Image (cartoon, rainbow, N blue to C red; front, side):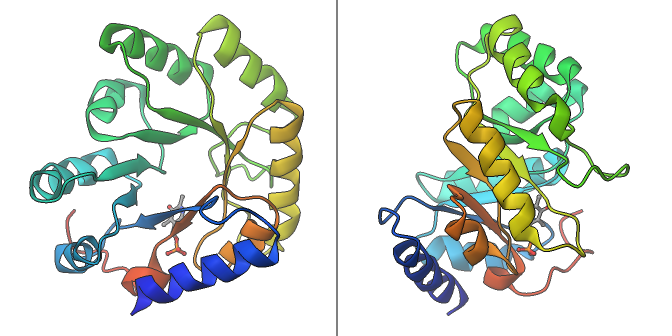
Length: 221
Ligand SMILES: *Cc1c(COP(=O)(O)O)cnc(C)c1O
């Protein structure tokens, strides 16, 4: 079974990197997957999932949460500031904090709710114009702004490396930026490269197609 296979590969990679067992969390990325496949993974006991659209998650997860206990869903796609309140209803973590306007909205909403999701800052390590994320040169000051100006606890950094480059270089860069900012969380690694991410310190890997199969873009939208 795909989930079992991925869990085993995570175990092997974790051991090989001389890291503690259980130090890598597997986020099963369920975006645009048929609900039956998601239910199957829930039935196998997995509880941590990733979605990249607020709207899609809103249409799917309230029902699954009613059926299965202990579910956690992480937002791994872009968040518009006008959807912050909805996002706080839906997600235990947000991996895509990437601009001050969003940090401010999150801070206001978190204060009203009295609880804060786990927050990761997305970094555009490849400096790709079309991609979200803070530029490498701005990471330190953005972490500081989130912490000091907005009183937001930051759990770590997140990256989606450029498609045609060796991801390890981007994982290593992300790990270095996290370390110098005193951040423990590293959200990095997907189906094709999660073992390399684990070797470089990933704490959260985001694996979709290797668990669920190819995505079916026409469903759940
Ligand atoms: C879709 C997605 C993934 C999962 O990709 P796979 O290659 O299917 O494992 C991981 N991270 C982000 C941000 C995604 O949007």
